Image (cartoon, rainbow, N blue to C red; front, side):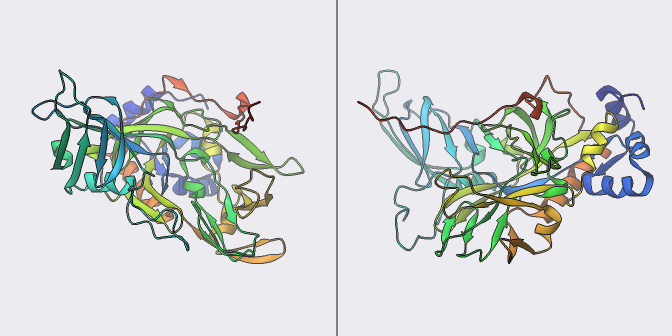
Length: 401
């Protein structure tokens, strides 16, 4: 088949003739009709993920009070926001905690509230307490402010997440003899449980592993509204995993920086989340349409849970100390079965991401496209792919003297 173009697909969407399927539906279609025929028939495949995504936050512009103020420090519901941007702009990070949170309690305290919860409260239209202080200048004389706001009081509220939609993530286990508290949840001692956080065959970046369609300017479902890919995400080091025999085990390492209007979004798809003994974050819903431009793109988009693998990593000793800790690979089909075998032991599994919500996102995005409410955007620049061979750096501690 000759390659389709974005324009041709968008023309079909506008005419109500586009064939749009979710990634799950594409898998079934390929089994029924074969890859070549499915690639010819299908125009767009929709994907979805809903999971905790720590590298998230929002830029907020409060507008000036009278008299005017250059906000030096800002708190929202007692959660610090970074105000070193401009006079009344601030960035609230999803993992920021109130200054009086029991961070160092032992046993670990249950984190009550954080930046992700502030974002959820704003999106839900709930009142949020704003407190600010300043040093005062001739043009901005006010030194203190305490008031209550809602999202409708803000000039702008922009969700900007520097690292979201991890392409693939670890299956976390604990080899030590003590319970540990991590961003992958509570991990029981001696391989007592295993947690994972990727939606497998619905996961957006697993369906376009070489970034042939996802790039800067790609229009996406973000938090219940429309957003865009702004750049590759921080720690974007895409690669194709292989086992000792060279067999491909699927992609890993890609991330996205995404942006969208917070005022369009919904608390169903932006949810403040906290982990016992670790802290706060934000669970984010993301859906990405993949145009089926050719058979190669269709083949990757049709990858199944049986063909996609996650690395098993020890979070008790290896991960926190940056030591080699890969205990092998496990397919998403095995993870979703509820149990895996690690070091000869049967270990129960549980997801931190919601496959049910991922399926719902893919379905919502499919509906938007079918109704002509959502057109595809061709990236102005594609993102670095596994072929670029990017590798990450860790912080090396240098001693003085």
